[in-house]
Length: 155
Image 1 (cartoon, rainbow, N blue to C red):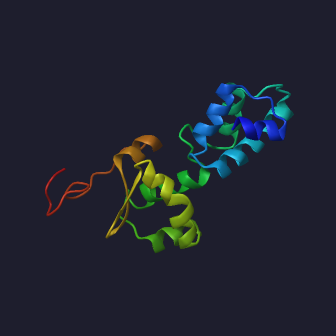
Image 2: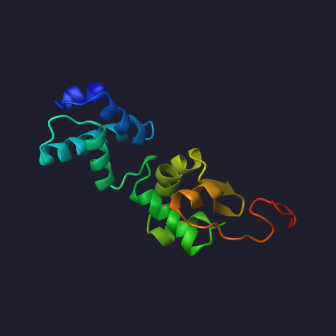
Image 3: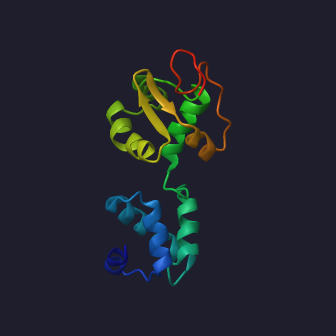
């Protein structure tokens, strides 16, 4: 992150670099994109150095939350939670509901959500975990037979 800041001519503190890196999902391409956007916000606001507060403010305006979820990730999670009771729901249904291609959902959106423990891929479809509901600030719906139970047994 510091090298990228030097290349772009951005004065950045260590905590500012850490904040951007933390929200970049461990992906250099995303880190570079966020760094450029944060730099732009800092220039417009007249901030001479990008510190944690400047980075946090810019990332909030960009709708990147504390763990790196962006607007599309939240749209995906909200749609499954609110429209389909947390799942299970098939990928084709998700693609149609979001008006996004299936491969974009599988290759871009879902990997990070799976990695964070927000989503499970089951034979019956995608299923949100309790962690996803907590992150969204939603109550988890009651599911018949328990969320992951077999043959109607409770959790």
